[in-house]
Each structure stands twice: as C-alpha cells, then as structure tokens.
Image (cartoon, rainbow, N blue to C red; front, side):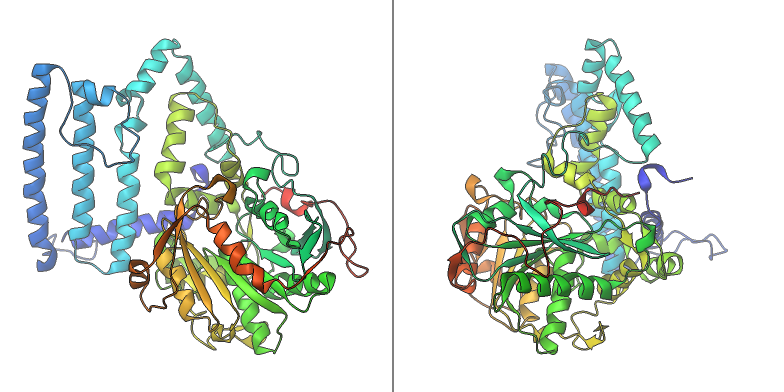
Length: 572
C-alpha cells in the first residue's frame, strides 16, 4: 500500500537518519551499546545545551508572569511574538484571548528552543543540515493553528456553519487520501492550451523525448538569431508561458525574438530506458540543431532553467569540445552546476538512498512525479502544505484558483536511469564541475570549454538552487559572464513580469571568488530582471530582419498547434 500523499522512501529514510543523528549527539545509547550507559555528548555542545536549558526555563518563567498579568487585564498582548511575516497568528484571538495567547507563546518558545538546540549540537554539517530540516518540519507540523481544537478561526467557522465546514473538510481529506495527493490548488480551474500555455505557435519537430515548439512572431521585424529555451524536465514548460500578463515567452516575442521552446515528454513506462545522455543529445543538442536550421541564422541564443540549464550546459560543453560554434550566448535561470551546497534537496541524497534507487529503477523504470512533488512541497511546507491543510481540511474551503500552483501540481515523471545518474553524478558526487570527470555522449565534459557570453540569474530566497551555488557558475564558464541576483524564490523570482514593475534585483560588474563579496559590492535595481536581460541579449541577437509568416521550413514543417500534446499528458 502506498504511503499517504506519495511520501517517497528518501523522505522516510532521511527522517530516520536525522533522528539517529540527534540520538547520538545527545549521548543516548544505540542498539549496539549493551550496558545501557549514557554516552557523553561532546564538550563543544554540552556547554551550549546547558545554556539553552537555562534560557528555556527563564522563558517559561517569563511566560508564566505574562500569563498572570494577562489574566488580570483579560488580554493576551505582549510576550513572545512571531517573527515578521509569519501570518499564522494574525487573527485577533491570538492577541486578545489569554488562552490562545498562551498557546501561541508556548509554541513559539518551544520552537525556538528546538531550533537553537539543533544549532548547539556538535555534528558533521551534512547531518546537522538534515536534522535542521526535519526539526523545521516538526515545528511547523506542531503549530496550534493546524489543530481543530486550538485554532480559533476553525472553531468559530464550525459554530457559524453548524459543523458543515468540518464535514466538508473531512470529505476533502478523504478525497485527497483516495487520490494520494494533497490538493494545493483548484486543478479544474485551468486548461493547458486554453487558460495557460496560450501563446500562438506550432510544433515543428518531435521525437520520443520532446516536441519543439516555434512561436509566431509578434513584431514586423525580428532579430536574426532566434532564442531556444530548454526548461526543466522535472516540471512542464508552461511555467514560462502561463497567462499573457506573466508569460516570459510573450515578453520575448514582443521584443522581436523568434522563440523556440522544448516541451519534454511526460515519461510513461515506455520511456523507462532514457538516460542523461538522451536528454543531452536527443534533447538539447537536437533542439539547437533544428532551431538553427529553421532560422537560417549563423548562431542562436539559448536559455536553460534549473535542471534544463544543467542539461543545456552539458550539451554546450560537448559542442564546444567538438568545435561546434552554433550558439552565440547562454542564459541560465536558477541553475546549479556546482553541487557542493545543494540546499535542502541534499537532505534526501546519500550513498545509501542513491544506491537503493539504482537497484530498483537505475536500469529501467519510472520515478513517479507524485513522489518528487511531495518532496518539493516539504521544502516550503509553511507555504504549500499547512495553509492548505487548514483551509481545505479544517475549514472546508475550496482550493484557491492560482495559475502558478496549478502548474506546480501538474507533475511529471522521470525515467529511472536518467534520475539515478543525475542524483549520483550531480547531487552525491558533484562530478560535473570537475573537468573530464564525466563522459557524456562519448565526449569528456569540461565546462571551461563554454567560453560564450553568459547571463546567470539566481534568486535570493531560492530553496531549490541556493543562490550561492548558482553563483559558482561564474567560475566554471570561461566567457564573459553577467551574474544577476533576483528577489524572491525559485519560481516567483524568475516569473517576475517587467510590466508589473515589482521586486528588485542586484547587479555588479566585479568578479569575485566568494558570493558574499560579490553581494556586498552589488547595486540593487528596482523592478524585474527581464528588462536587464533583454538589454543584455539585444546586441547578441544579430541584425533585424522581416518576420516570417510561415513557421518551420521544408525539413521541419509545422504540425499540431502549440502547446502540443506532450505537455497535456498527465503523470500516471
């Protein structure tokens, strides 16, 4: 029987290892110790733990004093307050009702103690990172806002609806358990090709791995060099073409670019043999060849996002080694090439977990998108899991209608061999950054061969590709590299339409070895990085030519209309 909400083995195993690390660090005996004696925790951590216990007791005493004072004036103001931006306790009851104020402050005090305790432990950094991650998961799960009996808004709504909200919430929970997924958005609110992914174009090529879309021009004149976008195969491409108001594709064509988009196939059982080499050779490299053929240009410009950027960078290194100069510039959006600091995803990756996957699907099979989707939700559980639990299950509210969350819930599978190779060689062993360590498509890979102009975007709150890791691309590529740091996170930081003039980004022409040094000297600019990027790309896009009215060419004639059928396929 499947675990609830498609919880993958990596999550369960990593949770158990985090608990074992805590057990050892606190000095408790393991199964191998037969005398039942305590193991002394290290001196490095024992002194700090004692200080934390004193601070915790002091906090309890202050909380009791506050409780007495609150009882006397009938209000719960003051005391321990949540950090700025924490909206879980924004209701007036959490401030004005003494009981709820006590619940809130006790929870915040205990949360602070648990977090500080983890930081005080003397352990290897990777183990501490794993323990830190799961401690945060437990802290967020134990919030009183997540329980019917301790959430005043839930109780009031239940009373106002004569319990109907609770009944509806229970129905919602049973429905989600039945399908094995947490509902995070209204999955019926949008239709791919009608409400999202609506830019006009046609499929001009397809193979077993991808469809290549060419979009219709939106200007009378276009740049001679087209733009090819390689999105992540972990998600679907239409994050870059949501609705007209926030479509990166639309922005590009309106600025006179001929745009090609890779639409990866959502793998089913028949695709279980595909490996990393297939995605590089029959994916990125094939798309580059066709985009250049159709445009008739001397060179093309390319964009890669996340793992799409890793695939694209592998392809460029191979092409440059082979003497292929058909690419004029490369743009990488929140892409990791040096995996020494992989962020929270590294919590789930070690030799044991990778080897287990290699034994099960490494030689053929599918890694289910629902499992990967669960992992991504845990990375932002405070935003993606618990608010939906409260609204959907405790309050019985329908899920919200939001295009970005709709895309997030539209998961994709991955071929087992490709996934296992990626986990081992990128996240576990960090081989791509080492010149000649990997051979892909029969060619030794050296990222230093990529001597093209490069635009590298990272985002400051990225939970999937930490911006400091993305910054290290500047030391791997040998061309003239412009590094830009956008505000917000992995998705919202990239999809930041220029027309809305929101957020900001940081730029600097200095080249530094350390990311922190670069940031200290960078200038913050208001608005979207899209404007900075299009200004950077323009002189690398060639002369202006009359836009063609016909898509494709004789070798690659237009077929089905964009967005094509591959993107509409649902994961099993």
